[in-house]
Length: 483
Image 1 (cartoon, rainbow, N blue to C red):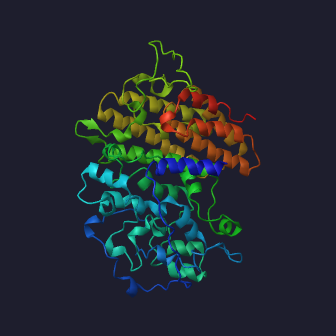
Image 2 (spheres, rainbow, N blue to C red):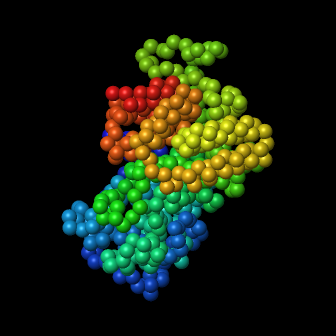
Image 3 (tube, rainbow, N blue to C red):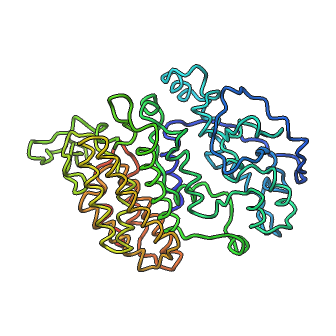
């Protein structure tokens, strides 16, 4: 049940209505490992050089292409190998189930073409750097081997690093995992390094950031949570051999590390990037979507008492504005800075010590107040939050999450919901993904106190952003742990 909902949530976030119909890609018929011959890989795949850019790569080695990993004796087996330390069907699962494998193909559909036209791009999306940088492994032509194909989307080496140095030793099976890392394999098993890699597209960096203009052109809202996205896209098995060779992090630890790192990147993009302002206007992608994009025809009287619902409408009408402790100072009708990532870090701060959590909340309140003052005040307020998060990150990176820790986190999430911390859909969405990770950690330790019934209610309350009602969410999250 948890996995299915994670899958649903992530497809909702990533795909939205960018649905595509793709035939199954043929598996490689090459049954032998690929020999690494630099002389044979010097000629890059044909490509329009004007579409190339400095897309993120864990390192600058030559990218040999997905085909170099897809042989049936490597990671392209049709079914799991029974007598192997690696099941060897990782590519097959990735190609069949992972949205990253279809990221380039999305650029070919009608909605993507319309987005490109709305943005006034001189080229179609499949040939535009602004799209390719996150929808493909868009390394420069000089780093593309003969078997590299941009059509493969966000391929193996986009995450694992260019394979020119490590693929040969890796295929031999005679080297340690550390030796593979020394040869350029990226340590995706480590939550912090994985977070730093993923957020380059899923939050943004100096070269890639989904500004409000891109969303206004039709791109889905961007959202991210490391543990959820890792679980949904998992194409490998964490077995005894994996645990012997690599770092294995609990779901709660992965969630916590990803939450803090994503929040810090968001701050860095605003404070130190080139995206914070567009002329006189602030860059609106840093602000809460629902501060503006909310229902305007909800029947509500001046005293904020919801009027009777129309016949047949079973959900309480969503109020245009509700008081919220963290942003009460700015009141209704004001564009509100997106604090959905910060809210969860305050809950992590409570776990460290209640004072740390309250310091983060006080800094969030000051940030909202500063956002109505001047840019310099907002920059300083965000810097203050980042300073607190830096300290929190140091303390929690190696933390082991016990049953008591997880129960405390859940209790805190429920308590903060009463303060309306999760009033916006973005914040509620983060809370649900946090609960999923915490619940998974509890279950690994034999605790099933968060029941399917309570989780189903929470999922239902957040499954549709257009139908999200804060009151329903508060009611649902209050049932956590109920039978």
